[in-house]
Image (tube, rainbow, N blue to C red):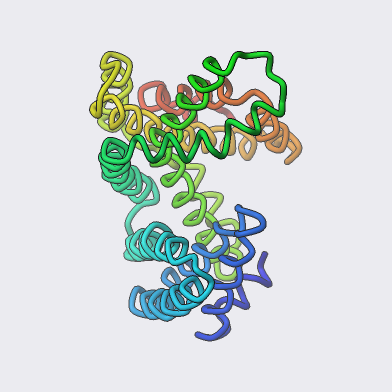
Length: 302
């Protein structure tokens, strides 16, 4: 990882190449998209907002040209608007410096506007979106021989289509935070080893954010249908993501203070994938309640 970070900062051409290269690799392995955005984030953190914006603009020109030639212009627009520009904005805030906790909250706030936009788009293009999902997902489920009737399968698929819209903003916030954390980690590897770990383990979003988050979840559960439900469901997903990050920060703090082996954290992340979504909600609840309970203050070093 340190070698990748050093390559990104070696010069403007290297930074552009890294940004575009990881974006292309993401077509085959989605997590590479985090590295693409993190390349812009790293340049912005180390060399400043102006240099980061220059890299973003040049990479965007190349990306739009390549995607236009290949007939995938929408993909190019998606990278520029939804990944590269937001990560540049968040990274330049973090470089000022603004606390990591506040930058994460700002990412969540941006995500709430994305949730509103997705809900409006779904309302306007619900029929087309549902047809697209049915055409692509229904044949797969039919081949899987689920034992459900055609009508039941369609209802399940349409429910999934709605969920994808509802939680799209939450995934976007998670992507931005992961990319930003990766960029910050790269920076610490080069200039301040261990610095990002110390910074992340202190992540705390605050009582006000926790109260507003609970209100969003309650409202999403209370309003059952319509565009307001769609928006509130998206907001509730973002709340889960934000406090999941705080809950994981607590886990990393416990591991560091109690001097636990790294295997402990690997097992935690593995269980998150195996027990999804239940463990995600549990960790998010721990992160939420930490704003009152302050668990980290109770952990004594060995």
